[in-house]
Amino acid sequence: AAPSIHREQALPNCLLIFAKMKIESATLFLALAASATAFAPSGMSAVRSHSVSLNILKDEVDKAELDKALGREIDYKPGMAQTAFAKQYSGLVGQEVRTVGEAFKEFTAILGAPVSPLYKSMVSDIVGTTHLITVNARFKRDAIWSLGMVSALDLLFKNYPEVRIRTQIQTALFEATNLDEDTIRSEAASIVSWAEGKSKDEISAALRGEGDSPVAKIATAAKADEFWMYSRFFGLGLVKMMEMVGVEQNADDTYPVMEEWMGKALDKPFFTACSDSDLYFKIKGKLDMMETMMKEIEIREKKRMAERLEAKAEAALKQAERDAEFADIAAADKEEKAEEKEAQPFFANDE
Picture 1: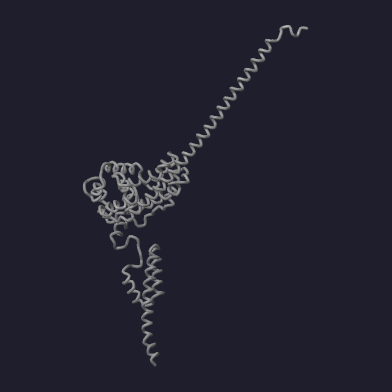
Picture 2 (picture 1 turned 90 degrees about the vertical axis):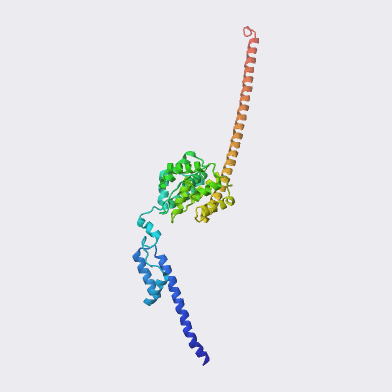
């Protein structure tokens, strides 16, 4: 009898555990359904979420409780969320955005020339990265970003083998990403001009918004923008400014300065900027290594060319010596024959 009593008492507990598992599974499935249908049309998301909820939970009360517990609407409509972010950018709903493939196709058409095989991957990356930055609704270009853009291009294409193609690649990049090259370079030059002769502390003060310098104005605008977007070229612009104030150009020395400028002065997250600066120095190291290899190859080729020219010169000299020797022998033979002719008697054949 005792085992039967225990089984009777254990049965409700099992049902309770099963019910809890069912509710937890339903919550998980509904959350997954919401995330999966966020990118589908609103009608499809409503149908799918409703069918999922009907398959998992048959009780309308349970469904209502779960929807309330989730604290969000299952049906997603772009720009209709009751948040400051959605309200600020709701006017962009429905606008078409070019893909990376379309931007690269335009870049290729503008360039109209093949890219060196050593630079193909690098060019593809910078075209795609720049396009994705500039089409973001939160993106706002500033002079520090422009400085980073120009610095990156100078680093990447410093040793490009053909100067004309190098210039064309950069121009095609600006045009394909809807940027004005002259404006970008002018903004970069303004920051370089201002930063000359400044100290690290003076730039820190400007990044805190002190003064009326171009950097201070950029910092003030960034702090006032709740949705200000950091992008890679902004971080590279800061790295270039570090170089100008004498910060040693390696990841270990720039990390604390980047943390101070981005985190403490600008009051923005600094981890991505530090990561970008690390990537910058890794690429710089590879490019420096490639530059060294190219110089070594160039030196070897010049040495081989010099050896070939020297061999040709020696062969030409030997040939000239042989020709002169043959000329002397021919002249001597001619002179000898003339002397023999003169030595013969005039009437030697009249007998």
